[in-house]
Length: 321
Image (tube, rainbow, N blue to C red; front, side, top):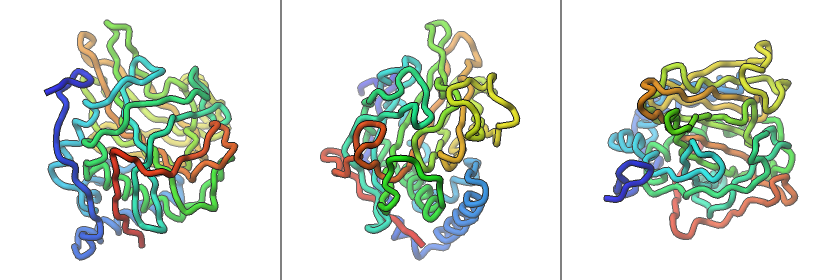
């Protein structure tokens, strides 16, 4: 069996979650009730933090398979090199959340670009980046699929501050999903920074970050701070104004999930530290950006392709109230 990212590559058949088959189960409506309560908080505060132990029954109610909760912990073994960061490995997929057809579909790959105009100030700002594509083990996992359904239910109808160059007349959403493993190994000169760019935003309308696991990570690592938009883009956490910090959250447990309106806040994340300095550390996350499609003339330099993925298709039914 081949090795990828230092680990054995997993081989399993993909599953497709059909949420419509869940409509006659009580657990489905318990999940919907929980999601609507979270959506109410999201409308008020523009962010929610959901502990994994609370999210797991919601995802099961939407149809996530029991065995996929273990499988999703292993998908980060399949991540590949990041073109601009030596401490991170990544896979990446583009999806369309389409309320009109009530489906989520995999889109063809495109480069990923963030710019300083979108409050992203880093050495690779404005550079189109290409990553290894999301493997079958990732997009064919019903936990990952249920997370996309969960997010689509939370964000529908939530007002956001518009971003320049996005088509807010479109009913469709572009969903960009990263599986990112951040590595730290001081002996090898690798220092993991989940947000090397410091205080930033991600050019999105709604951002969701999901903790999959960690190895040899010090428990005070990778704390997320949410900042008022008045905070200076690009400053590090120790340079920030404490009076502009709006929230502090810490992904510590499996499937701990943060979701927020990306253009209403800036955010930062502290470093990944080793617990045992003699052994490398890593932190595995799903990071899901959702926004309206780009218009021609968008600052990134290109519009969104809506063509379906030719070799890794996905068509996921949606349920909307």
